Image (cartoon, rainbow, N blue to C red; front, top):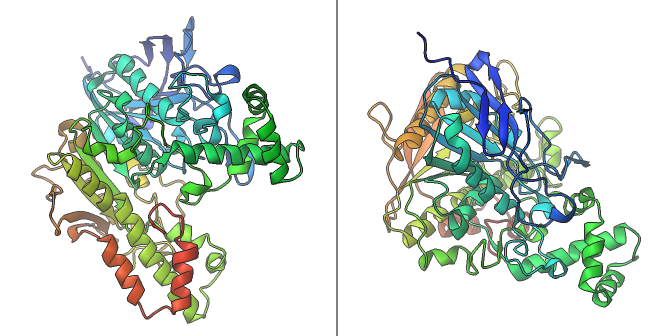
Amino acid sequence: MNTRLNRDETIKVSSGRLKGIRVAEINVIAWLGVPYASPPVDQLRWKAPREVEPWTGILSVRDFKNGCIQMIQGLPFGSEDCLYLNIWRPDHAESDLPVFVFLHGGGNVNGSGRDFQGGLLAYETNSIVITVNYRLGAMGFYRHPALRTGDPLDDSGNYGLLDIIHALKWVQTNIIAFGGNPKNVTLAGQSAGARNALAAYLSPLSKGLFHKLYAMSGGLTTVTSDQGEAKANDILASLLMKTGVTNTFEEALGWISTQSAASISDYLRGQQAARFAEIIGDTGLRMDAFPHLFEDGTVIPKDGFEELKHRHPSCIPVILGSTASEFSGFALADPRFFHLQQGPLSEDEEQKKLYECAVQYGNELYAAFNVEQVAEKLIISIPELPIYTYRFGWGLQDGVIDPVIRFLIGAPHGADIPFYTGDFSNVLHNHPVGVISEHNEPGRKMLSSLMRSYLRRFLYTGDPNSEELPVWQRWILGSCTNDILYLDANEKQAMVQSIPQLVTNHIISRLDEDDRVTDEQRRWLQMHLFAGRFFWKD
């Protein structure tokens, strides 16, 4: 009897029965749009997540549900009713599988769990892959004094992070029903999702909910509660002008100063969620534009990641990754460079040199912020912590992708995700030497297989190494020569090597001495393009 295809897609969880869908072409079962908390609407807006209400009968979970409120191409999209997760597992009878919970990126203002298609990864790593929707923007991170109730969770402002922690609790309660091992959960994420995963590691509320950490292109970012409250008041003032209550910002501040907390709370709760998203807009790696992950003292300690020195979280295996061209997409979006992507590269050599410097130093600074600085902070606090680091560089080899695209974007922020998921549908296709092409398929597929092999080993053992794979060294406390695993491929095959770590002070010194830019251009890079970004300390 064949026992590899007899797991039922109908599952009993704590709130009721779920019916998923078999995806025969990749040999997985999926449960998409599974509710893990009550909809955070009406009186539950700006409250910690509540348990999902039980249902009767069988709930069909065969397609993605609403994303959370956000702006897409200048228009509001999604719903406040958005607390759903998605589950994929191989279509066989095995149980006790490792669990990979992935948090999407998007600056904590956009994105959803459907962005990371987990089916092929679940099959290739023989694991359960879960993606999570969590509240975004001001619905997810908003801390205004007028909303205080006296409950430390409801008052924290960290609703998006509390959603993530609630989803992890749901996994602990229910994952056995899907054949998963609740004692072997890896929390992962990319960009804002990775920053949230690191914040969850810091939070005392997540103790015991996950056992490994896989952070892709996400640094250590928290802000004080005072910063959060100041921004919340600015958003409120903008709303007052937007809705015609006041005409100027000064009038709005005057209105706020004369109102009771109850009046302000009623006004805020009466506003459409989309209006908050419109006001926040795109933040571009700038925490001042949208402070979040508040050091409230309950969800996140008062001293943020400095608290690691005094309170050691669990000693769990950690992988930290970044791409080699982390900043290129953000640089290209600047008005000074935006025209470069509109057609053939300008003949203006000075402009090209300025862009080349912008991406070189921005890439290195952002990559170091996401990996080297995180590794050092963690291992200084917890010297025995097993940390492995990588840098993803596919697209930088001559002949792999179109040379103009290589110059402009290289291996940009998020470029490593399709190599895990196998989903290249949102990546530019072009024959023969675009980004994704038949020309580079052999090397690309080999690199993708290698990356999944490392991940599979890590999910099962906490160590990505095996005899069949190139050696991946652990990060060593106090070493100035820590190597980072460099993941790359030419058009034919994967290329893996160790490269030296980046040192932020050295990067800044090289920028100060670079004769490709004038002093005026250097000041523009530092005071305009880099200023306010996560990786740049003014």
